[in-house]
Length: 258
Image 1 (cartoon, rainbow, N blue to C red):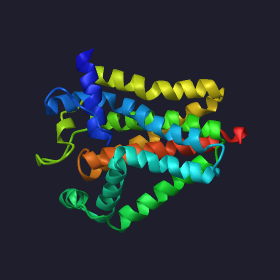
Image 2 (cartoon, rainbow, N blue to C red; image 1 turned 90 degrees about the horizontal axis):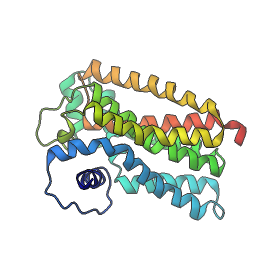
Image 3 (tube, one colour; image 1 turned 90 degrees about the vertical axis):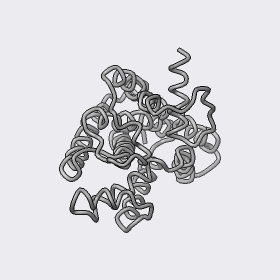
């Protein structure tokens, strides 16, 4: 149990900006194993977003509440996943060979594709959330934060890491994850979504799963075609797109609650 707790803390240390103390020395293998708890990190991120809704839901416009929810999620993660999404937009938008795509994604500067991609992504999240009643907005957050991270983990399970440089920040998770890791990740990633669907008594929300499968298949095929696998930036992009798709599905499928 103590070992698993250390892995949870390691996941928080790597995937968020929250101050945590890990008693054991840093070990790349531990970080690789800690990836199983990435959906659990989504519980934490979602918790901070729910605090915003709880504090401002009855005293502030819904638009402001939704925007601050997004801001808090960016603050908690240090824009970790948003950065990956922007880099993937730049790389796949401006590169025509594997080497060039990887080079562009490694560049710390943001280009036109990355800027426009982020603007459209954030705008889609904002509009989707602000169109929902507060209680459904909260349910969407509870479902989206863990499930989107689990979607990214499935890429690690099925594809190969393609960067060869040892300085890559995602290098420790390049060894992939086991079936047991996937079981743990699926529990923390899927359970909140199923609970939300049951609590809302809106089983049409289950259509979110095939929507995610289609988007995940498209992005996985795109990565495989152009670079032969995934990078850390690709994982961040998958998480961001999956989160946005979940919000869109809630916005469309929960219309009767508005």
